[in-house]
Image (cartoon, rainbow, N blue to C red; front, side, top):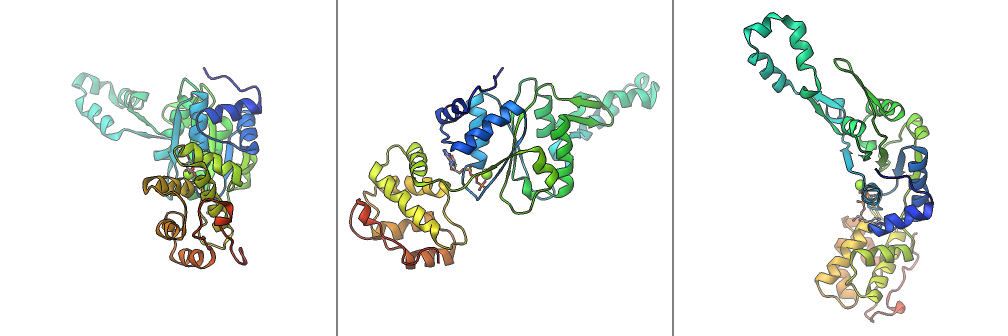
Length: 307
Ligand SMILES: Nc1ncnc2c1ncn2[C@@H]1O[C@H](COP(=O)(O)OP(=O)(O)OP(=O)(O)O)[C@@H](O)[C@H]1O
Ligand SMILES: [Mg+2]
């Protein structure tokens, strides 16, 4: 049975051990969520480690991860539970004459039992005998009705099934909801959650993350990569490169055996970090990567960056 952590440092170290480098606020909120039993709402741009935080918490606490991937039109049948109609039908057809005599009441009690229930992520998380981590990913993709239903589950930790009764949580899941801000979430939901804003990391933490994912990459090269990514982020791009792109770029450099990021390497591999035509144009125009090697002077600036 996983135990509650006793300090923020313990949580940060635990996450570090499973490969997630949490900043101060991520560690604090993860600690509080476990101690207060509240869900975490994680918001922030794409690719900054929102989903990974949930996965890492699952690894570090030894809890199973149950994931509900949200999308437009997601309904209770896919999130909570559904009756297994086919199985119910088969059971009714297989009934012997004797049983049929017992009538509808008998059949009904029989086919609306747990045996015929298809549990979906929310019910699964609630009814799990061992506490789990429940990741409700990209909640902003669903509609408000779904959010209202979710609120009920998250505040009472129980689910009512009309034909079966109330299913109460045996254990409390550690719940993380993520959002990319495609729509404003309701106040009611926000009120029930601890809030965590994840942003692009500062340079040293990003360097650590990149090195963690590609330990074989030369440190000077990794630093240069991160410096360039951070510069590119300052431009007014449609989609600034995230941590995910930094990691991809690091892997690319390893694969192509780059020893330095010179102009040619940069131009050849730039599409790994910027993925819109207009962004690519802007970056080629504004980022001047000198031909010189490794040293910090090798990366030069953006005349009028961020303008
Ligand atoms: N703090 C961190 N420590 C280690 N790895 C990280 C960290 N933050 C992000 N990453 C890595 O960055 C990548 C992107 O993270 P993730 O998929 O969690 O982003 P996201 O915020 O959920 O993005 P999206 O909004 O697109 O779903 C993953 O490979 C993850 O391992
Ligand atoms: Mg995600």
